[in-house]
Length: 333
Ligand SMILES: Nc1ncnc2c1ncn2[C@@H]1O[C@H](COP(=O)(O)OP(=O)(O)OP(=O)(O)O)[C@@H](O)[C@H]1O
Image (cartoon, rainbow, N blue to C red):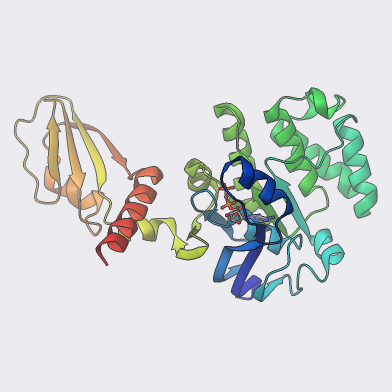
């Protein structure tokens, strides 16, 4: 499995003008030649293979956008090496741009005063996309993201959700191998978020487009990204599959059994009863190795079992637990 993206010991430090407190300090800050150094990305390393969908996660200021900007060639690493599709992104920005798509949730790449379709046409010319391929992609993506009703409207007249859908379509018209998205669902309503997530998951699955996205909305990860890279204070703290993080944290699954008639007390050795509503009983499956089949085997077939619902711990719970345990360990040491 060859990596499409390779990061080795990548760091990025920014120089920021030193700030001084108070009114006098404000004047001093304007003329000072003193700098402080901020480390935004610190010694990060990973490989991303073709066809993966990776969520890049971390608290505010952890260095997510900086890493995306380095991978797209906008920023230059202070140290370490970065290879995207076999190139050093900032040295071969133009060649890189032809093979990647980029969406920044907070910044538009569409022409503000032009109808959406005109931005797309310009994009086709800049990227020299063959006419037939352009038409095919435009039709397919417009259908999937329901763009047709506003293709002729000026970008400045669009709602945030409409604009974001248009941004994503434009980023994919030239068939990029990799799509980078920095907070693609920020500020969107529930319906628009859902449409964007399903679309990205489909593009990844159907076309094999490699996706790397940053987000604060963990549902984005849940729907699109089997793999998580987590950073905190500029450093990598987890790289692996979401289900492995779940398993490592021992997060319990919740099970609900519904019966046609009250089966009476039903103690199980494989699950812990948490609430008994008579016809409906709630359990926790604390051990990862216990399967649903085992539990149902223990319940037996003669108890009038009507329905079963198994809930994985939600991703918010898993990530919160992970950060809490890390912080607790840091305080203890
Ligand atoms: N151009 C810049 N000049 C100076 N400092 C910067 C610059 N860009 C980012 N930083 C600093 O680098 C750190 C990481 O910023 P970055 O935007 O990468 O974080 P982030 O994880 O994307 O945060 P958020 O979730 O808030 O978007 C922050 O301390 C930020 O102030």
